[in-house]
Amino acid sequence: MSDLHPPLPLPLPRVVVAAPATGQGKTTIATGLMAALRRRGSAVSGHKVGPDYIDPGYHALACGRPGRNLDPHLVAPERVVPLLLHGARTPSPADVAVVEGVMGLFDGRVGTGGFASTAHVAALTSSPVVLVVDIARSTRTIGAIVHGLATWDPAVRVAGVVLNRAGSPRHVAEVRSAVDLPVLGVVPRSAEVATPSRHLGLLTAAENAEADAMIAALADLVEEHVDLDAVLALARSAPPLEAAPWAPPVPAPGRGAPVVAVAAGPAFTFAYAETAELLAAAGCRVVGFDPLRDTALPAGTAGLYLGGGFPEVHTTALADNHALREQVGAAVRDGLPTVAECAGLLYLCRSLDGAPMAGALAADAAMTERLTLRYPIARAAGATLLTRPGEQVSGHEFHRTAVRPGAGPTPAWCVDDEPIGFASPTLHASYLHTHWAGHPHLAARFAEAVHAR
Image 1 (cartoon, rainbow, N blue to C red):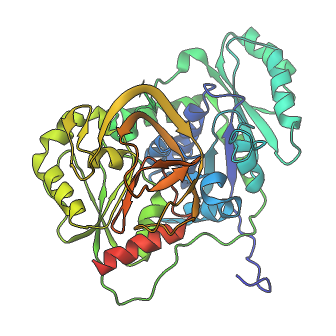
Image 2: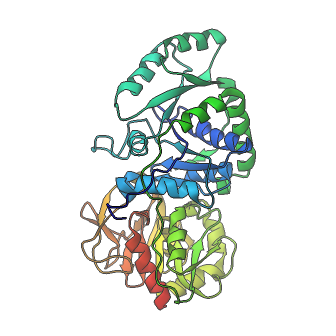
Image 3: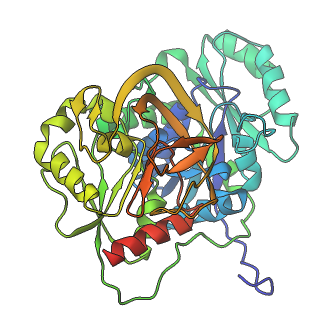
Protein backbone atom coordinates (compact mmCIF):
# COMPACT_ATOMS: atom_id res chain seq x y z
CA MET A 1 0.00 0.00 0.00
CA SER A 2 1.48 3.34 -1.00
CA ASP A 3 2.13 5.94 1.70
CA LEU A 4 0.09 8.33 -0.49
CA HIS A 5 -3.00 6.14 -0.04
CA PRO A 6 -3.14 4.95 3.57
CA PRO A 7 -5.83 2.38 4.40
CA LEU A 8 -9.17 3.76 5.47
CA PRO A 9 -10.01 3.31 9.16
CA LEU A 10 -12.10 0.13 9.56
CA PRO A 11 -14.60 -0.18 12.41
CA LEU A 12 -14.58 -3.48 14.31
CA PRO A 13 -16.21 -3.85 17.72
CA ARG A 14 -13.84 -5.99 19.74
CA VAL A 15 -12.80 -6.99 23.22
CA VAL A 16 -9.85 -8.90 24.69
CA VAL A 17 -10.56 -11.35 27.52
CA ALA A 18 -7.56 -11.56 29.85
CA ALA A 19 -6.68 -12.70 33.38
CA PRO A 20 -4.04 -12.19 36.08
CA ALA A 21 -2.76 -15.75 35.52
CA THR A 22 -3.53 -19.08 33.93
CA GLY A 23 -6.40 -20.98 35.54
CA GLN A 24 -8.65 -17.99 36.29
CA GLY A 25 -11.38 -19.04 33.84
CA LYS A 26 -10.70 -16.88 30.79
CA THR A 27 -11.23 -19.75 28.31
CA THR A 28 -14.60 -20.47 29.94
CA ILE A 29 -15.70 -16.83 29.80
CA ALA A 30 -14.22 -16.04 26.36
CA THR A 31 -15.71 -19.11 24.69
CA GLY A 32 -19.00 -18.61 26.50
CA LEU A 33 -19.10 -14.98 25.34
CA MET A 34 -18.59 -16.06 21.74
CA ALA A 35 -21.37 -18.65 21.95
CA ALA A 36 -23.77 -16.39 23.86
CA LEU A 37 -23.31 -13.45 21.50
CA ARG A 38 -23.80 -15.73 18.51
CA ARG A 39 -26.95 -17.15 20.10
CA ARG A 40 -28.26 -13.59 20.37
CA GLY A 41 -27.81 -13.11 16.63
CA SER A 42 -24.38 -11.51 16.37
CA ALA A 43 -21.80 -12.78 13.89
CA VAL A 44 -18.77 -13.38 16.12
CA SER A 45 -15.13 -13.74 15.12
CA GLY A 46 -13.08 -15.73 17.65
CA HIS A 47 -9.34 -15.21 18.14
CA LYS A 48 -6.63 -16.52 20.46
CA VAL A 49 -3.45 -14.76 21.57
CA GLY A 50 -0.41 -17.00 21.14
CA PRO A 51 0.33 -20.18 19.21
CA ASP A 52 -2.22 -22.46 20.90
CA TYR A 53 -4.34 -24.61 18.57
CA ILE A 54 -6.73 -26.13 21.11
CA ASP A 55 -8.73 -23.09 22.23
CA PRO A 56 -9.38 -21.95 18.61
CA GLY A 57 -11.00 -25.33 17.99
CA TYR A 58 -13.60 -24.52 20.66
CA HIS A 59 -13.85 -20.95 19.37
CA ALA A 60 -14.73 -22.35 15.94
CA LEU A 61 -17.59 -24.36 17.44
CA ALA A 62 -18.80 -21.36 19.43
CA CYS A 63 -18.65 -18.95 16.47
CA GLY A 64 -19.46 -21.21 13.52
CA ARG A 65 -16.38 -19.98 11.66
CA PRO A 66 -12.63 -20.68 11.92
CA GLY A 67 -10.91 -19.79 15.17
CA ARG A 68 -7.75 -17.78 14.49
CA ASN A 69 -4.52 -16.90 16.27
CA LEU A 70 -2.92 -13.51 16.89
CA ASP A 71 0.75 -13.98 17.76
CA PRO A 72 3.35 -11.21 17.30
CA HIS A 73 6.17 -13.74 17.66
CA LEU A 74 4.91 -16.04 14.92
CA VAL A 75 3.76 -13.43 12.40
CA ALA A 76 5.51 -10.16 13.46
CA PRO A 77 3.70 -7.29 15.22
CA GLU A 78 2.81 -5.44 12.01
CA ARG A 79 0.66 -8.38 10.81
CA VAL A 80 -1.47 -8.72 13.95
CA VAL A 81 -4.06 -6.07 13.06
CA PRO A 82 -4.31 -7.16 9.40
CA LEU A 83 -4.87 -10.76 10.53
CA LEU A 84 -7.50 -9.67 13.05
CA LEU A 85 -9.35 -7.78 10.31
CA HIS A 86 -9.00 -10.71 7.90
CA GLY A 87 -10.47 -13.11 10.43
CA ALA A 88 -13.31 -10.72 11.19
CA ARG A 89 -14.18 -10.51 7.47
CA THR A 90 -13.73 -14.18 6.49
CA PRO A 91 -15.88 -15.97 5.44
CA SER A 92 -18.27 -13.04 6.07
CA PRO A 93 -18.16 -9.78 8.07
CA ALA A 94 -18.43 -10.22 11.83
CA ASP A 95 -20.38 -7.91 14.12
CA VAL A 96 -17.89 -8.32 16.95
CA ALA A 97 -14.50 -9.95 17.61
CA VAL A 98 -13.69 -11.68 20.90
CA VAL A 99 -9.98 -12.25 21.55
CA GLU A 100 -9.00 -14.74 24.25
CA GLY A 101 -5.70 -13.95 25.93
CA VAL A 102 -2.89 -16.26 27.01
CA MET A 103 -1.44 -16.82 30.51
CA GLY A 104 -1.42 -13.64 32.64
CA LEU A 105 -2.14 -10.30 31.01
CA PHE A 106 1.50 -9.20 30.81
CA ASP A 107 3.14 -12.63 30.38
CA GLY A 108 4.90 -12.97 27.03
CA ARG A 109 7.94 -14.57 25.48
CA VAL A 110 10.45 -15.02 28.30
CA GLY A 111 13.22 -12.44 28.38
CA THR A 112 11.52 -9.96 26.04
CA GLY A 113 9.69 -7.63 28.42
CA GLY A 114 6.24 -8.99 27.60
CA PHE A 115 6.57 -9.35 23.82
CA ALA A 116 3.68 -11.41 22.37
CA SER A 117 1.70 -11.14 25.62
CA THR A 118 -2.02 -10.52 25.80
CA ALA A 119 -1.25 -6.92 26.76
CA HIS A 120 0.97 -6.57 23.69
CA VAL A 121 -1.83 -7.76 21.39
CA ALA A 122 -4.41 -5.58 23.18
CA ALA A 123 -2.17 -2.54 22.65
CA LEU A 124 -1.42 -3.40 19.01
CA THR A 125 -5.14 -3.76 18.27
CA SER A 126 -6.31 -0.87 20.51
CA SER A 127 -8.78 -3.27 22.13
CA PRO A 128 -10.46 -2.81 25.51
CA VAL A 129 -9.65 -5.57 28.00
CA VAL A 130 -12.04 -7.49 30.23
CA LEU A 131 -10.30 -9.16 33.16
CA VAL A 132 -11.54 -12.53 34.37
CA VAL A 133 -10.50 -12.90 38.01
CA ASP A 134 -10.92 -15.97 40.21
CA ILE A 135 -12.09 -14.55 43.54
CA ALA A 136 -12.68 -17.85 45.36
CA ARG A 137 -9.86 -17.35 47.88
CA SER A 138 -9.78 -13.58 48.33
CA THR A 139 -11.90 -10.46 48.86
CA ARG A 140 -10.48 -6.93 49.03
CA THR A 141 -7.12 -8.04 47.66
CA ILE A 142 -8.89 -8.54 44.33
CA GLY A 143 -9.21 -4.76 44.18
CA ALA A 144 -5.45 -4.36 44.46
CA ILE A 145 -4.85 -6.96 41.75
CA VAL A 146 -7.31 -5.32 39.36
CA HIS A 147 -5.99 -1.84 40.10
CA GLY A 148 -2.42 -2.94 39.51
CA LEU A 149 -3.21 -4.61 36.20
CA ALA A 150 -5.29 -1.64 35.04
CA THR A 151 -2.57 0.91 35.78
CA TRP A 152 0.58 -1.04 34.93
CA ASP A 153 0.76 0.02 31.27
CA PRO A 154 -1.06 3.12 29.98
CA ALA A 155 -1.11 1.59 26.47
CA VAL A 156 -3.44 -1.15 27.73
CA ARG A 157 -7.06 -0.17 28.52
CA VAL A 158 -8.44 -2.54 31.15
CA ALA A 159 -12.09 -1.53 31.12
CA GLY A 160 -14.11 -4.15 33.00
CA VAL A 161 -14.02 -7.21 35.23
CA VAL A 162 -15.79 -10.56 35.41
CA LEU A 163 -15.62 -12.04 38.91
CA ASN A 164 -15.32 -15.81 38.61
CA ARG A 165 -15.93 -18.54 41.17
CA ALA A 166 -17.81 -16.16 43.43
CA GLY A 167 -19.18 -17.27 46.80
CA SER A 168 -21.93 -15.77 48.94
CA PRO A 169 -23.56 -12.38 48.29
CA ARG A 170 -21.52 -11.03 51.22
CA HIS A 171 -18.32 -12.29 49.58
CA VAL A 172 -19.24 -10.65 46.27
CA ALA A 173 -20.19 -7.37 47.94
CA GLU A 174 -16.83 -7.18 49.69
CA VAL A 175 -14.99 -7.75 46.41
CA ARG A 176 -17.15 -5.24 44.53
CA SER A 177 -16.43 -2.59 47.15
CA ALA A 178 -12.71 -2.89 46.46
CA VAL A 179 -12.78 -3.04 42.64
CA ASP A 180 -12.55 0.34 40.93
CA LEU A 181 -13.66 -0.88 37.46
CA PRO A 182 -17.11 -1.83 36.16
CA VAL A 183 -18.08 -5.37 37.14
CA LEU A 184 -19.53 -6.93 33.99
CA GLY A 185 -20.40 -10.29 35.47
CA VAL A 186 -20.34 -12.46 38.57
CA VAL A 187 -20.04 -16.21 37.94
CA PRO A 188 -20.67 -18.47 40.96
CA ARG A 189 -18.25 -21.25 41.76
CA SER A 190 -20.99 -23.86 41.52
CA ALA A 191 -21.52 -22.96 37.85
CA GLU A 192 -18.21 -24.27 36.53
CA VAL A 193 -18.16 -26.12 33.21
CA ALA A 194 -15.38 -28.72 33.10
CA THR A 195 -13.30 -29.34 30.00
CA PRO A 196 -11.47 -32.71 29.85
CA SER A 197 -7.68 -32.45 29.80
CA ARG A 198 -4.62 -34.67 29.32
CA HIS A 199 -0.82 -34.55 29.04
CA LEU A 200 -0.58 -31.41 26.87
CA GLY A 201 -3.65 -29.50 28.01
CA LEU A 202 -7.34 -29.58 27.17
CA LEU A 203 -8.87 -32.31 25.05
CA THR A 204 -9.25 -30.96 21.52
CA ALA A 205 -12.72 -30.13 20.23
CA ALA A 206 -12.43 -32.80 17.52
CA GLU A 207 -11.79 -35.48 20.15
CA ASN A 208 -14.33 -34.27 22.71
CA ALA A 209 -17.64 -36.07 22.16
CA GLU A 210 -19.33 -33.58 24.49
CA ALA A 211 -17.91 -30.48 22.77
CA ASP A 212 -21.22 -29.22 21.36
CA ALA A 213 -23.00 -29.72 24.67
CA MET A 214 -20.15 -27.99 26.47
CA ILE A 215 -20.38 -24.95 24.17
CA ALA A 216 -24.12 -24.75 24.81
CA ALA A 217 -23.50 -24.94 28.56
CA LEU A 218 -20.90 -22.16 28.35
CA ALA A 219 -23.39 -19.98 26.45
CA ASP A 220 -25.98 -20.63 29.17
CA LEU A 221 -23.44 -19.77 31.86
CA VAL A 222 -22.44 -16.45 30.32
CA GLU A 223 -26.01 -15.47 29.39
CA GLU A 224 -27.08 -15.96 33.00
CA HIS A 225 -24.15 -14.33 34.80
CA VAL A 226 -22.52 -11.78 32.44
CA ASP A 227 -24.02 -8.51 31.18
CA LEU A 228 -23.82 -9.06 27.43
CA ASP A 229 -25.12 -5.59 26.63
CA ALA A 230 -22.34 -4.04 28.70
CA VAL A 231 -19.72 -6.22 26.98
CA LEU A 232 -21.05 -5.20 23.55
CA ALA A 233 -21.02 -1.53 24.54
CA LEU A 234 -17.42 -1.91 25.63
CA ALA A 235 -16.53 -3.67 22.36
CA ARG A 236 -18.15 -0.86 20.36
CA SER A 237 -15.99 1.67 22.19
CA ALA A 238 -12.89 0.32 20.43
CA PRO A 239 -11.57 2.81 17.85
CA PRO A 240 -11.44 2.03 14.12
CA LEU A 241 -8.34 0.17 12.95
CA GLU A 242 -6.14 1.91 10.40
CA ALA A 243 -4.86 -1.09 8.49
CA ALA A 244 -5.73 -3.17 5.45
CA PRO A 245 -6.98 -6.71 6.13
CA TRP A 246 -4.39 -9.41 5.47
CA ALA A 247 -4.84 -11.32 2.23
CA PRO A 248 -2.74 -14.15 0.79
CA PRO A 249 -0.81 -13.25 -2.37
CA VAL A 250 -2.50 -14.53 -5.50
CA PRO A 251 -0.23 -15.88 -8.27
CA ALA A 252 -0.83 -15.70 -12.00
CA PRO A 253 -3.77 -17.91 -13.07
CA GLY A 254 -3.69 -20.76 -15.52
CA ARG A 255 -1.54 -23.32 -13.70
CA GLY A 256 -4.21 -25.87 -12.88
CA ALA A 257 -5.24 -26.88 -9.36
CA PRO A 258 -3.06 -29.71 -8.01
CA VAL A 259 -4.31 -31.47 -4.90
CA VAL A 260 -2.61 -30.88 -1.54
CA ALA A 261 -3.71 -33.57 0.90
CA VAL A 262 -3.98 -32.12 4.42
CA ALA A 263 -4.17 -34.49 7.39
CA ALA A 264 -7.25 -33.93 9.57
CA GLY A 265 -9.42 -35.88 11.98
CA PRO A 266 -8.90 -36.55 15.70
CA ALA A 267 -5.15 -37.27 15.43
CA PHE A 268 -4.32 -34.18 13.35
CA THR A 269 -6.31 -31.27 14.74
CA PHE A 270 -3.68 -28.50 14.72
CA ALA A 271 -3.64 -26.13 11.76
CA TYR A 272 -3.80 -22.40 11.23
CA ALA A 273 -6.68 -21.42 8.96
CA GLU A 274 -4.38 -19.18 6.94
CA THR A 275 -2.28 -22.18 5.84
CA ALA A 276 -5.09 -23.58 3.67
CA GLU A 277 -5.95 -20.07 2.49
CA LEU A 278 -2.38 -19.46 1.33
CA LEU A 279 -2.27 -22.77 -0.52
CA ALA A 280 -5.65 -22.14 -2.16
CA ALA A 281 -4.52 -18.67 -3.22
CA ALA A 282 -1.41 -20.26 -4.74
CA GLY A 283 -3.61 -22.35 -7.01
CA CYS A 284 -3.69 -25.58 -5.01
CA ARG A 285 -6.83 -27.54 -4.15
CA VAL A 286 -6.74 -28.37 -0.45
CA VAL A 287 -8.38 -31.72 0.35
CA GLY A 288 -8.57 -33.08 3.88
CA PHE A 289 -8.11 -36.73 4.79
CA ASP A 290 -8.18 -38.65 8.07
CA PRO A 291 -5.15 -40.91 8.68
CA LEU A 292 -7.19 -42.85 11.24
CA ARG A 293 -9.90 -43.89 8.79
CA ASP A 294 -9.07 -43.14 5.14
CA THR A 295 -7.30 -46.02 3.44
CA ALA A 296 -5.76 -43.93 0.65
CA LEU A 297 -4.59 -40.40 -0.05
CA PRO A 298 -7.05 -38.21 -1.98
CA ALA A 299 -7.08 -38.88 -5.71
CA GLY A 300 -4.48 -36.87 -7.60
CA THR A 301 -2.44 -35.92 -4.52
CA ALA A 302 0.54 -33.82 -5.60
CA GLY A 303 1.55 -32.54 -2.18
CA LEU A 304 1.15 -33.63 1.44
CA TYR A 305 0.76 -31.46 4.54
CA LEU A 306 0.86 -33.26 7.90
CA GLY A 307 0.27 -30.73 10.66
CA GLY A 308 0.10 -31.02 14.42
CA GLY A 309 -2.05 -33.06 16.75
CA PHE A 310 -1.89 -35.99 19.13
CA PRO A 311 -0.91 -39.14 17.20
CA GLU A 312 0.55 -40.54 20.43
CA VAL A 313 -3.04 -40.93 21.67
CA HIS A 314 -4.09 -42.78 18.52
CA THR A 315 -1.09 -45.03 17.79
CA THR A 316 -3.09 -48.26 17.52
CA ALA A 317 -5.59 -46.88 15.00
CA LEU A 318 -2.84 -45.20 12.96
CA ALA A 319 -0.80 -48.39 12.93
CA ASP A 320 -3.81 -50.53 12.01
CA ASN A 321 -4.45 -48.41 8.91
CA HIS A 322 -1.80 -50.38 6.99
CA ALA A 323 -2.85 -49.30 3.51
CA LEU A 324 -2.60 -45.57 4.12
CA ARG A 325 0.62 -45.50 6.10
CA GLU A 326 2.33 -47.72 3.55
CA GLN A 327 1.11 -45.47 0.72
CA VAL A 328 2.29 -42.36 2.56
CA GLY A 329 5.69 -43.87 3.30
CA ALA A 330 6.22 -44.90 -0.31
CA ALA A 331 4.99 -41.56 -1.68
CA VAL A 332 7.27 -39.50 0.58
CA ARG A 333 10.27 -41.68 -0.23
CA ASP A 334 9.39 -41.28 -3.92
CA GLY A 335 9.61 -37.47 -3.67
CA LEU A 336 6.04 -36.33 -3.03
CA PRO A 337 6.43 -32.73 -1.74
CA THR A 338 5.72 -33.12 1.97
CA VAL A 339 5.62 -30.79 4.96
CA ALA A 340 5.30 -32.37 8.41
CA GLU A 341 5.11 -30.46 11.68
CA CYS A 342 5.29 -32.22 15.06
CA ALA A 343 2.51 -34.82 14.76
CA GLY A 344 3.36 -35.15 11.08
CA LEU A 345 7.00 -35.81 11.99
CA LEU A 346 5.91 -38.61 14.34
CA TYR A 347 3.68 -40.15 11.69
CA LEU A 348 6.54 -40.27 9.18
CA CYS A 349 8.84 -42.13 11.59
CA ARG A 350 9.34 -45.89 11.52
CA SER A 351 7.55 -46.26 14.85
CA LEU A 352 5.79 -44.34 17.60
CA ASP A 353 5.88 -45.94 21.04
CA GLY A 354 6.68 -49.23 19.29
CA ALA A 355 3.73 -49.09 16.90
CA PRO A 356 4.61 -49.02 13.18
CA MET A 357 4.14 -45.69 11.39
CA ALA A 358 4.68 -44.63 7.76
CA GLY A 359 8.41 -45.39 7.78
CA ALA A 360 9.42 -42.49 5.53
CA LEU A 361 12.14 -41.42 8.01
CA ALA A 362 14.96 -43.50 9.46
CA ALA A 363 13.91 -42.53 12.96
CA ASP A 364 11.73 -43.72 15.84
CA ALA A 365 9.59 -41.73 18.26
CA ALA A 366 8.44 -42.33 21.83
CA MET A 367 6.75 -40.56 24.73
CA THR A 368 9.08 -39.12 27.38
CA GLU A 369 8.76 -37.56 30.84
CA ARG A 370 10.23 -34.29 29.56
CA LEU A 371 8.06 -31.49 28.21
CA THR A 372 9.64 -29.48 25.42
CA LEU A 373 8.14 -26.01 25.31
CA ARG A 374 9.95 -23.23 23.51
CA TYR A 375 9.25 -20.21 21.36
CA PRO A 376 12.43 -19.98 19.29
CA ILE A 377 13.94 -18.29 16.30
CA ALA A 378 15.05 -21.10 13.97
CA ARG A 379 17.68 -20.91 11.26
CA ALA A 380 17.58 -22.89 8.03
CA ALA A 381 20.53 -25.25 7.77
CA GLY A 382 20.42 -25.70 4.00
CA ALA A 383 18.47 -25.59 0.78
CA THR A 384 15.34 -27.71 1.24
CA LEU A 385 11.75 -27.89 0.09
CA LEU A 386 10.90 -24.81 2.18
CA THR A 387 14.16 -23.05 3.02
CA ARG A 388 17.32 -21.48 1.74
CA PRO A 389 20.56 -21.49 3.79
CA GLY A 390 20.67 -19.03 6.64
CA GLU A 391 17.02 -17.94 6.51
CA GLN A 392 15.32 -17.43 9.87
CA VAL A 393 11.76 -18.07 11.00
CA SER A 394 9.91 -17.73 14.31
CA GLY A 395 8.12 -20.79 15.61
CA HIS A 396 7.09 -22.80 18.63
CA GLU A 397 7.50 -26.34 19.98
CA PHE A 398 5.24 -28.12 22.45
CA HIS A 399 5.58 -31.89 22.87
CA ARG A 400 6.34 -34.74 25.26
CA THR A 401 7.75 -37.07 22.64
CA ALA A 402 11.29 -37.44 21.37
CA VAL A 403 12.56 -38.63 17.99
CA ARG A 404 15.80 -40.59 17.68
CA PRO A 405 17.88 -39.55 15.87
CA GLY A 406 16.75 -35.98 16.31
CA ALA A 407 17.96 -34.82 12.91
CA GLY A 408 18.85 -36.20 9.50
CA PRO A 409 21.91 -35.52 7.30
CA THR A 410 20.17 -32.32 6.22
CA PRO A 411 18.26 -31.00 9.24
CA ALA A 412 15.10 -28.98 8.79
CA TRP A 413 16.24 -26.25 11.20
CA CYS A 414 18.88 -25.27 13.71
CA VAL A 415 17.54 -23.98 17.04
CA ASP A 416 20.12 -22.63 19.48
CA ASP A 417 22.77 -24.31 17.29
CA GLU A 418 21.01 -27.68 17.68
CA PRO A 419 20.03 -29.37 14.40
CA ILE A 420 16.45 -30.66 14.42
CA GLY A 421 14.27 -32.48 11.93
CA PHE A 422 14.73 -33.97 8.49
CA ALA A 423 14.74 -32.20 5.15
CA SER A 424 15.48 -32.62 1.46
CA PRO A 425 14.42 -30.90 -1.78
CA THR A 426 11.02 -32.64 -1.42
CA LEU A 427 10.60 -32.98 2.37
CA HIS A 428 10.52 -30.75 5.44
CA ALA A 429 9.74 -32.49 8.74
CA SER A 430 10.41 -31.25 12.28
CA TYR A 431 8.87 -30.49 15.65
CA LEU A 432 8.78 -26.75 14.89
CA HIS A 433 5.37 -25.20 14.20
CA THR A 434 5.40 -22.12 11.97
CA HIS A 435 2.60 -19.75 11.00
CA TRP A 436 2.82 -19.30 7.23
CA ALA A 437 1.00 -15.95 7.31
CA GLY A 438 4.17 -14.68 8.98
CA HIS A 439 6.42 -16.46 6.47
CA PRO A 440 4.43 -16.66 3.23
CA HIS A 441 7.53 -17.62 1.23
CA LEU A 442 7.29 -21.07 2.88
CA ALA A 443 3.82 -21.58 1.47
CA ALA A 444 4.92 -20.23 -1.93
CA ARG A 445 7.83 -22.67 -2.17
CA PHE A 446 5.69 -25.61 -1.15
CA ALA A 447 3.04 -24.61 -3.69
CA GLU A 448 5.68 -24.29 -6.44
CA ALA A 449 6.93 -27.80 -5.71
CA VAL A 450 3.36 -29.10 -5.79
CA HIS A 451 2.70 -27.45 -9.14
CA ALA A 452 5.96 -28.86 -10.49
CA ARG A 453 4.95 -32.33 -9.32
